[in-house]
Length: 233
Image (cartoon, rainbow, N blue to C red; front, side, top):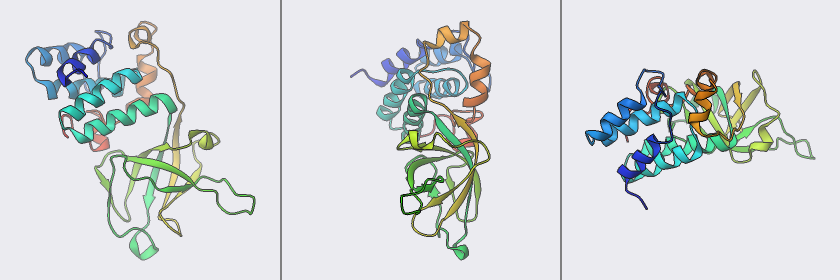
C-alpha cells in the first residue's frame, strides 16, 4: 500500500492541468502544496477540484485512503461518498425534520453519511403497506441536523434501482420508527456515470456541465455548504 503522500501525487496526475475548482484553486496550486509538502492543503484542494470537475472512482479512492492515513475522518468519509456517487448516482432533497412535540427526534444527528434511516418512497407491499427503503444521508451546509431544522441533503440508497422512479418535486418521508420523523422534497436526481479519464472530459468541454450537478458537494467552496471545512478531519 502506498503512503498518503504518494496517493496524493497519483491523484493529482488523474486531473487535467487546467482543472479549476469553483473557488478558483487549480491543479497547479495543488502541485505547489505538494512541492512544499503541505499535504493536508493539497488534499483539500484536490477534493475541491473533484467536487467541481469530472473525477473518476479511482481519484476518489486514492483521496479516501490518503485521508484515512492522515486521520482526516470526515474527508475520508466524503471521498468514499463521492466515489459511491460516481458509481451509483445520488438523490438530492430538502429535508425538514419534525420537532419532538410532533413525534420527531429529540437530538441532532451527524450529517457525514453514517445515519441510515428508512424512507417511504411511494412503494407498497402486496398488502398495501409502505415498502420502506434504506438510504444513507449526507447533510449539505451543516455538520449536523437537529429537530425542527431543514437542510439540503444527499441520499445514497442501499438499493439504487428502487429509487429510479423518483423525480424532482416528489415527496418522501424519513423514518426511524413509526411515525415519520421528517419529510423530504426531491430537488435533483443525478444518475450514475462511469466517468472516462477526466482529462478527456475537459478536452470535450464537459467541465461546465459537470459543475452544475456536482458543485453541491462538500469539498471546499462551496463545500462549506456541506459542513466539511477544507482540510478538516
